[in-house]
Length: 443
Image (cartoon, rainbow, N blue to C red; front, side, top):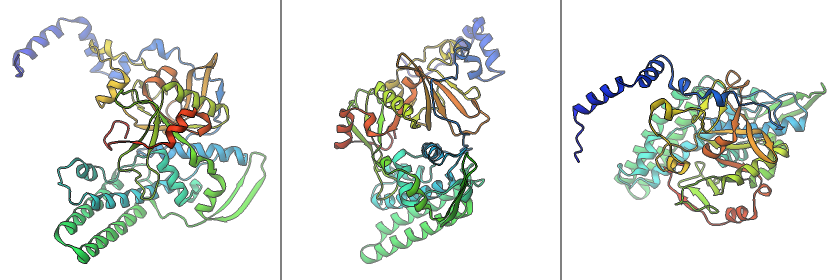
């Protein structure tokens, strides 16, 4: 067996391809339109009905635009459902920009802390490369969201609306990355080139200057967070309410229930090397110093579904994460495990199990949304209604339909109250966690 690819392989393969009329037809189709359009299985599309027997939403969707703030939007969508119900409102929206501002600030501080912790590591080590490769990302987790709310509070969307950069974070993240990479190098130099009192002074100077630079960049791109605002509203019955001036922390204290602090992340990880019924935590978290590590309990997929159904039946949307772009039709707003017939399209067997896809880095959590409905047949879920954060021009005015087969293959975690999970899960949640590396498929 030789490892060299001979030129004759391409020539012979080309002849075989040209002799296959099906291959040529598929080639003609895919060179003129997208592969996802050609592979879409119309039998499945025509069977998907958006109706569900349990449905919560009566509000409009939000829009994260060109940003990775889905986890913040999903968290705020859980909270806004509560405030809409509690205050009898037609609609309501929190400021996602307010949360994003403070998230970026906390992440920047975390990068500086990690720079000091790894200052004596070789630059080629994975931890240092990870730090420099991704110093200013948008992504996050449920506990990260809740930590930000508890520390900084919340404001209505009009008190700090999205800016152009809030919905299109590329230039913002570029500027933050410049500032943080520069600071990382200078902190490393301070550790290696000095000692004692001089070292401590140099590190503090670099850290302080970097945080000042980061705040300035954030304020330029996102605006300045308000210290207080006047809270008043009109409810569905046309009654006007005026609550006076509030700080963001006062607003959050009034409308974010304390029990959310005890919610549990239950996650489906079918990899045999990570046993079910154990607690896991992502290495080098939280991204807020002094915050909550990003932990989950591994459980069978049926447990995730049961917990989500119980929450929806009690009128509560469910924060969940998934691999959003797999087997998906964006414009139609539908998911099914077999929605695209890629095997037939390419004439190749591309099938892998969920565990194999995770090991191969083919799948992992890429997006967070909220479950706001479920259709049950004899108690078993048939499909789910999803509130996305991509605006109202996709799906059904921004809402999406997920067949239950897709939940099995591409949903990873749900965040639920402890009473919605088994005693075994609660015991595992209280136990010592197994640490997963920061580059794990679930991180």
